[in-house]
Amino acid sequence: MPPHSRTKVVSDSDPELSDLKMKHFTREEILNHTNDKYCILEDGVYDLTNFRDKHPGGDVLDFFPGQDATPHFYMLHQYESLPSVLAEYKVGSVARDDSYVYHTPLMKQIKSAVRKVMPMQEWWAPPSWYIKACAILAATLYTDYLWIASGPTIPLAIVSGLLYAAIGLNIQHDANHGSVSRNPMVNRLFGYSQDWIGGSRMLWIRQHVVGHHTHCNRHQHDPDVKGGSVITLSRYSLPKEFHHIQQYYFLPLIQLLGFQWVFLGLHDLIEMKYKGEKLPESYRKERNIAIGLRVFFFIRKFVVPFALHFSWYTLLCTYLWMAIAALYLGFFFILSHIFVGAKSLPEDAKNIDWARHQIESSSNVCGEKLGISNGGLNYQIEHHLFPRMSHAHYSKIQPVVQKVCEENGVNYKKFGTILSNLDSTFRQVKALGSVAVYNEFMEGL
Ligand SMILES: [Zn+2]
Picture 1: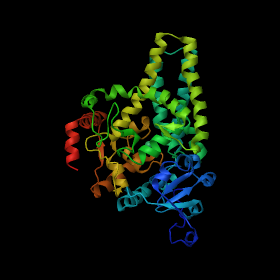
Picture 2: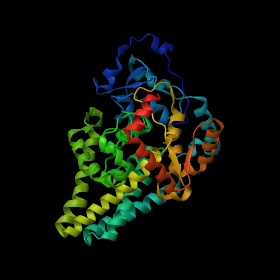
Picture 3: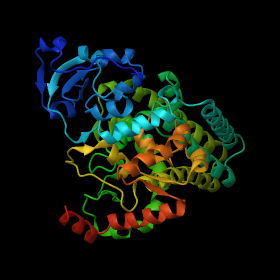
């Protein structure tokens, strides 16, 4: 839906709905995929299958069956209530989730201030974004060509790793948030650059947009801070014995994430699962595309280079290329959400000001120059408030957002240097791995 359009509001008192005998569902029925087509919006259950082709945002609707899509709806659109166009797709009612409050005075004030400096019709990517994206893609194609034609070298692996990270931060991230263009096909095409670098547009949207953005730093909801694994990043998870030294090994471990994305991701695609959870049928078409693109990736980056240039040196370069890409991506992610004072939420959070939480669970680092290489993701606070705004505009709205936050007593965390951010992240990772800190925190609740 266009973020700026205004239509009539759907409510239970609406005469269009008063005659309908709606079936009442339990939340578990929808969230456990009893029906592969239904999703929740507010207190209604919707089958949006036939709305997909009319949806201005395109096929992103395929990712929401089995979900409470309410947070995503208000995160991605500018409506303050459900538009009447959705009424004909309502198939039942359900208890409303009271985790978040969306249209708070704070959010309204931020939106109003931001629109004054950045009108909504200008939120899409400017020409400079396309120039940057095409330059990164062209350089990547050339290094990929050299990788096969001349064989990998260590300098080529370093450049290639950085270019793959640049695609992840600057191109696919914007595209899969739908912020590049009003035309969903443009977003989708650039979004497949995630598959070019060995990931999956489909799994990324499921993890990052559906999981992480909506429930930033929320226990058992944000897949990026799940506790209990080799690294624990959730305040609400009891650390295991070995976590007390995790501050020393989290960075070396991040470099291995590339192997997880490339190989375990393929397993998920084949099984049509996301982290063990069966995906609804609406994912199937996108999943088939993802498998085809992953096979192409394997041929391009492993089969052909190994067939032509197999040696220990080739293996070393391959490892280096994947490790650098993963380290760059993972390093800046962890800096953005894991720092001293970062807000986190328990699994059963209630009546949380969604905007305030997004701000207080994210941090910014440095300024415009880092934004050029990092896809504006060093403006993580602005990104979490406006994920459908091109990253090219974040530096412009940043002072406005900060000013509103300061006026409202919202903790707006901005690090002046990467080193100061890393220091804070190191201390927070250490605290999250400490049983004593966990016990103290839980007693204080
Ligand atoms: Zn994002």
